[in-house]
Image 1 (cartoon, rainbow, N blue to C red):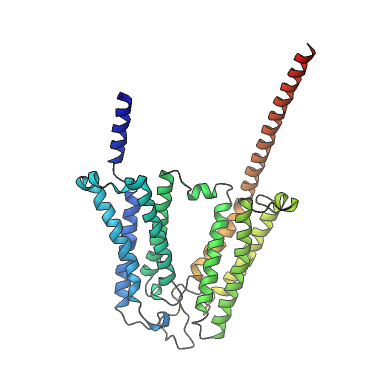
Image 2 (image 1 turned 180 degrees about the vertical axis):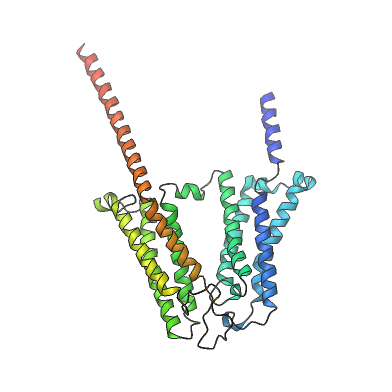
Amino acid sequence: NNKMQQNNANAQLQQLEHNKKWKCYLLICVTSLTNFVSIREAANVELRYYYHGKNLDVNYMFGVFTFAISLLILVFDFIELIRNKIDFKSLKDGKVEGWTLFLFVVWWVCGVVSITRAGSIGYAALNVYFSTWASLFACLNALNTWGGEKDILTFRELTRISITLPFWWVLFWASVLVFGSAADAIHLATTEHVRDSCGFAMGISIVTSFISAFFVLSHYEFFQCCMACTAWLTYGGWFELACSILADIWLVIGLEQLTGAGRIASTITGNGSSDPMSEEYVPGSNIYVAIWVAFIASVMVTVKWKEARAIRFARTAGGKNEEGDDEDEENGIEDSDQGKGEV
């Protein structure tokens, strides 16, 4: 009985502790506040180069929502009287908090699509652009921290199979972003060289997204259909190194073609001082940042390949040694049983 009472007391004490993710919520507050204040200021300025030539005031609601909810969570957590009655982190064994953070992530994915699409209000000021992405990453960080506390899947557990897997993931999502941004920007292009660079960006991203998707899936052993897939068409082998070098060269060509003067990825904000209907207009887009992130991720795969190969060989050798020990034990048991039978 004393033990049960002590356990209950410890559980109650743990329940009344401050939320350990308060820094995560504070970061969401800061990025969200920066975002909606910057968008509100930009929306009041008569700039003609927004998407479809309009200032989308509704975009500042993305920051307002997460700022208000995160601030409420912090206030409820720091006021002891409220925390004793409504402990947000413990509602439904933490499931309410988890679903709230998941909603934040989905909300800001929609926010990134709306605010940073080609020629949108996200390019009126870099504060708007970077605070939008920062808000999404802050929400992802909070959700990942919550998953670690609840012993649920985290980014580390998802990517710890090999040292190159995180960079393959980054390359994949950066390639998807390049493709989506180029497909969106091509509708706003007013000159042939901008349209051509958008088409080239889509071609670059299709190749790199295919390569990265293949190795992401191979890490999770999706390809077990033939001996080639399990032997050399997998991570940690020479085929991975060859593909990463090919991606490096391909992305160098992409950087040369896309980031030159007058190209679609020459800047982040584009040629915003010109009229969208003029021939000099280049819309702002995510392509500049995404193509550089893709290139760095691809280079990191190449750099980390040797280390990943060594770790893979060590794991394989360890697995074979364990199998050999198990076989020796089984043989020893059989020999002893035979010896007893002869006696």
